[in-house]
Length: 296
Image (cartoon, rainbow, N blue to C red; front, side):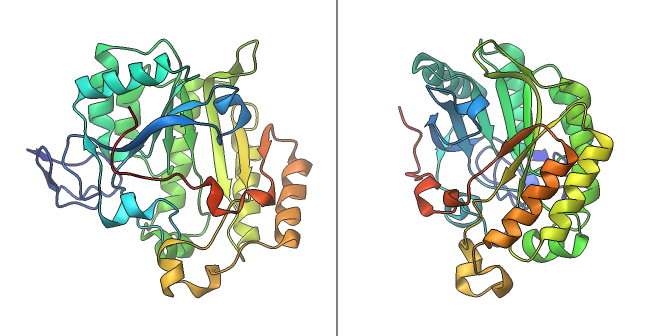
């Protein structure tokens, strides 16, 4: 049993092997909801063969619009995976041709991931794909084991973080976490085939009615980390999760073309490197299916 202080919640929850009473609702042993090749990440991550994505069950956040809500907030299905089992899953994905190992929402299982990676470092880059809601002490333990950080920067305004993810202080936490990630990885590095090998790529999902904070986030990146990180500006927002049940009704629509072009044009004016998603990505077709078992 452990008293958990892994994430910024600092909830001190008791986490046993397979059960926990903290925000993430998880024990200390990881649960894997899906492990498979994934073709819908940024081009330098998915490439021609796919990214070896490992979706972890549970989450330290409570995003009202979460597209993975069935595994992050509801039934918490998944396959238990010891550090040894994690290695087996990673090896299987690499055998299938994965360009990298892409750890999706690993925050609350970071210590188990660290334990696995210190015993065996995969021969492909390891990507830490997270909400950006990370504790500095946890990130520092991971230094040298993570090649690429892929954090979200969801909100600039604390009111939005509280209302939509129950995460007061999110913006300050994300800023410090992203700076630490960038310090660890340095500038983005690609191999001759254009696949990312090292670096930090910051994602921002544009929310309906929140173009101002999107631009504030982009401005901060330009002012603080423009020579180090890349940006991935995302248009795939789709009303989902508790939004469809009536919570946060202002989010119960897709972003408009005008909203998207406003933020996109601002990004271009800053001259930041990275990626821009098409608005056509706002469809359920790009939401993974979770069977409760990793794909073997």
